[in-house]
Image 1: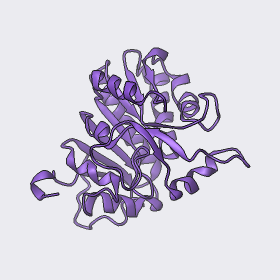
Image 2 (image 1 turned 120 degrees about the vertical axis):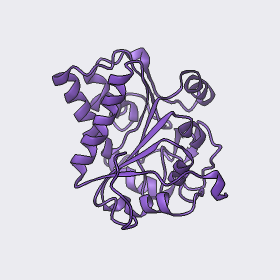
Image 3 (image 1 turned 90 degrees about the vertical axis):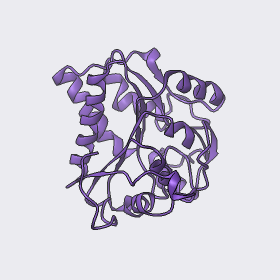
Length: 252
């Protein structure tokens, strides 16, 4: 990949701790919805997102933030789990966000392993205004594991061993988590008008540094975000620990 095909490394908003980073991301999501009530949001799950959704629910209850006209598309879901399974991302979103805000149920979309093409078509028809991402320890975004290509679309994927090890704790004791998931592809993510990635904790430091300052390559799928002109990174000081010391703490 040549330099002419890349954009400059995204700016980072580096906050002192995880709570501050989560709050900052929530504020940016709220600003998007306030500026455009009919916003289409690409939503993510994972432990780093719980504080973000908690903050948004608080804004809804206390400040009148409304999602009544918004639409959402979730990044990914495990294969083979019913929507009511406690470890499904459908349950996660319901528990931490959807059950507490006014987004209409028919405006909520989650991927299904048997309807990848339909999901991709629905995203293409609507267009995502703001895509929210986390980052895995191996650089995955969504469930686009190392080796994912920049042209990939919504599909079923094998989960990497490190992802299985990291996420097994989210399943009931004695239950083996699924080895496959359905995820938006890299190209799907890059089709969003704006992208914000949240990274917190020392465990994400290497993946984040490689994504922002290493080669743009399938080995670190998050590195493909540098091909997008409107990407912001919100992170805490631990996740930013391996970034270049010359990096500015610019607003994302």
